[in-house]
Image (cartoon, rainbow, N blue to C red; front, side, top):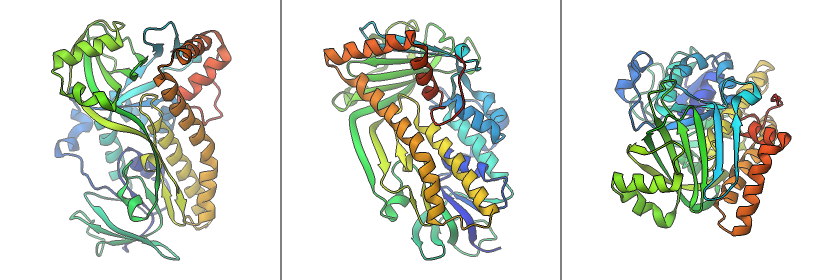
Length: 419
């Protein structure tokens, strides 16, 4: 066997692995290069999965559930998901609020919260089972260059499959999916347009005295938005929630350094008592928040996807779902082009993919960015407009349906929601 592949995916995380699965039914020869291996205990997780208290999670929209059903992965993923049956959006200290209910749109849930570890375990197992895919992990891309016919990649690492003759691969199409600080994009001089929010996201799991009843809370405060997402699958005795708390850069160090009791008291004051008393907090993580977009998402033989292409504010929960819609669309285009004998690395074909995706990207980025900025503005006049908007959503069915469609990851779809 040669070292030439039809498609090489750089990055075997949630986005890259999903693309590999979407290409798994094709006759294409695919390679997935992942720098970081899953830890050894995860090898048996499909039957012994136990999420830790500190496991970080991702909100998967209803639209993403439909995608994973099409890919044949939902039944596996669904073993460890917590449904979001309702979403409560409110503005701290003000009268504005709105609520979304899955029953109103005749769906089982508006979305689901899934531990990242379980998504990774499920997707990696699926990729390893694909007959057309070489899973090369751990391995790091050292160099990447494009010539007239293909892209050449040199790797370092000890995990190349036995049939590969050396550490150099070539590909008709390379998909860059190695995250928001993509080293591959840097090697190719693909620049990022970055706009800082001047904020950090603090992430932790918390336990509360009241069960969340599978309701997610989007709470906007005068220092930034926060989200409290339900955890615990369908166990009504499990009162954990996944917290995403946006803090100004000037406050994040002090909050991270707080003892648990002090942190809980501050969080309680900022969030309120909709979930009763906050009883426990897990390990805290934080990272700076930026809206970043690749200035080039396609080149001849190159496509950039996921956070490497566009990284969004996390509170609205749109980033991963946007990326998933993108890689499924890319897989469909690659599959169709290959079946017709077209060059899957041709710039004209890749530009068709990008042109078809720009509307969804623009709408989703606008939704995420503008909602974040609107609810981060502390001016009194803006606060009044916010409250009027939230109340308006509750009394105007058409406006609320549009908002719900975007929140459910259906903003780029022609699918209709029942009213």
